[in-house]
View 1: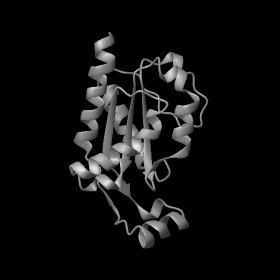
View 2 (view 1 turned 45 degrees about the vertical axis):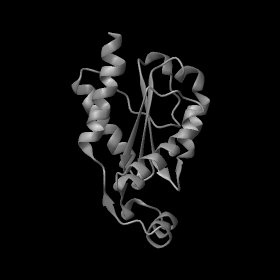
View 3 (view 1 turned 45 degrees about the horizontal axis):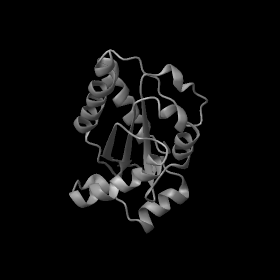
Length: 161
């Protein structure tokens, strides 16, 4: 996460999984991690300029062999979905494609994101305000995010116990 909204979303997903009795670790994509100890993995990324974050793509690429053995889900956050239309969902779905080169996800969460200018560095803030003209706001649908987490639990964890 660059501005914190993906981490906040990961925290919320983790809380939902913990409420279902799971043990959860939240890691950054640059941390060394032994994926063999996990029953499942959820990869989350913000979308910047129509792309998953480079560190997330690199994580998926570097760990594709292990991720192919573990039920893995992907979620993305993008302001494209602040207006949740079929057209915007189709666009958001394409943002996941680079990760699908390395991971066969058991589920995909497409969520509206958050734009908080105060969390952005100068150039990113300038681009968001002046070039992209992205309005500030939190567009995340928390019930939808919790539903994604609970469905992941039922699909992956509950069905394998």
